[in-house]
Length: 516
Image (cartoon, rainbow, N blue to C red; front, side):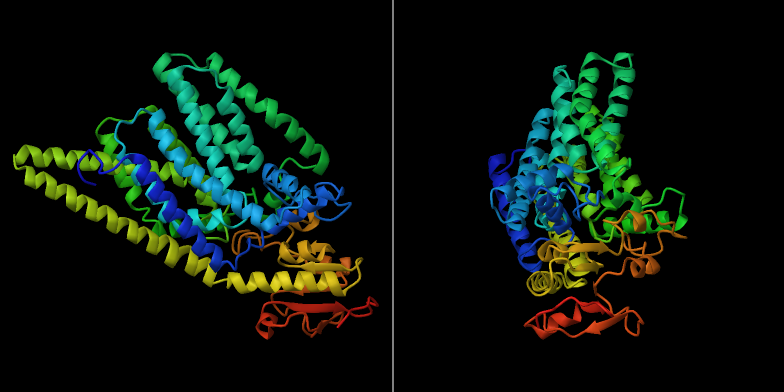
């Protein structure tokens, strides 16, 4: 890490971190096939239906809240209304949000009056080489915007505390975060509890005017939205929650969530976190901002474990990565300061101090290389992009969606197991067989919820047969030998290799025409 004086202005390192991040994101964008992931297209379909005057729905006339990113979807609908290509807009906004987050890391250090410029530099470079942070910035999903809003709310909250300002801005940012992802309410809860405990310990009171203003600003934005969505969809929680999570205390769900947390930690050198956080604690520097970031980190990790994790490697963890890297950076700087002080006490040689600084810098550089290798190459790239053959799968679904749009009647009813690109490009009424966009399937009771793949555990074959979709497009040949459906070998793609990704079944007796 070198001596306390950095070799260049901190803004230079911020620029370097941004360039590294952009190259990292360009790598993933290419590996994803130059397109958003399939799940992003669910929101695109809701946005398109809103622009077309059908309402914020997946299928016209069916009010199901199969998205969890209201603000993101509204923003995309705005751009779609003016004719912009939604996938490129979504990816572009994700990239901009990720770069803005690096800038916010520096601003957070200024707000907490951290005189050591190495902390934001170390944290920003950590984010830049982190595979999860880079991948999900170009996924077309709301992840990066949510990360930015959470860190902005936390930064402003700390600033309001230090300057004794009313909590209006942090309350508004927390509301925007909660309207972007439901977990924003969890962040609000952390802030509220933290502020109450801080006031009790430091000021011997429970609440102040600033806290009331913060709550009022949050409710002024969030409450009208919440009442609207409850009236519009009829449930307290998004349909996606019911499709993916059980609250009945499934041990299997918790065990899967803990495994997911463990996998993420092992791929992100997570074993370092407790060691580095202990450094400032042992030095009695357990400050206001430190307790806030720790509370946010621990609460969020517990939540991820409780809901059973995710099918991705690190998508759920990205919102807390800035807090994690700020804590790690602060711990590294404190540890290095202690080591340097100890070296200074046992020897007066300046060369020894310089040597320790050079060695610390080399160790830090090696740490970045290891983080990139494990979190990116062996993590997100190997376990998500390569494992799911993301680029070719995307190409297959896009081609299938466009082929259906051009070659079957507009009133054709289809069923799919991947509810993004095929429904979006086909424009056809669609049954989501895993229930994210279907109320019946989402509310099924599944024994030992948590033993399967997150988001893919609720499946009602009899219900699908009862709905009688005209065509069923699936990623596995699960209807071969069916009495009701027959597999069709229509020439829907010019590339023969794409046929391994999707299987098309036609309901026997369906009289709709197909151009082949």
